[in-house]
Length: 207
Image (cartoon, rainbow, N blue to C red):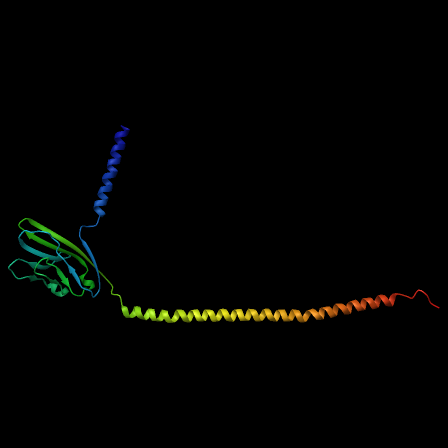
């Protein structure tokens, strides 16, 4: 009975793990990233040799284009507003000459044939445009500031070393000047002691 309970516990854990993986796994599709102002082309990558009945491009479930063979291409107001174009032959790609933040989203190409309906999904992400002018300015400023900062640090280091050397030399000169005075003072004290001793000594014989 205990083995059966363990078996059920293991299977239940495996089942929950699979469910969580399926729920949080990303949806199938193609991811593409473009900078603001750059071109983007989204292909309808569907390998089908059957006769095309209808093709539809959508952005975030909003229809952009509807195409039927031997009929004119229908372009929606949303596609006109976003300035998006479509090729009317394989691979029926969407063409965006200069992407903007408004073009970011999920695109779906739906193809209806005699065999059924198939679709291709794209996720378009737009990043901020790099500004070469500002980057060049930053590089120029860095090229000027860094050498100047290094020169200032070197100058400050030399000034500090010079002051330390000068102070050390002054201390040495003061020490050398004080030493003779101490020697003279000590000699004077020794002479006073000797004189004092000689003054207290009386001659052995007196007439």
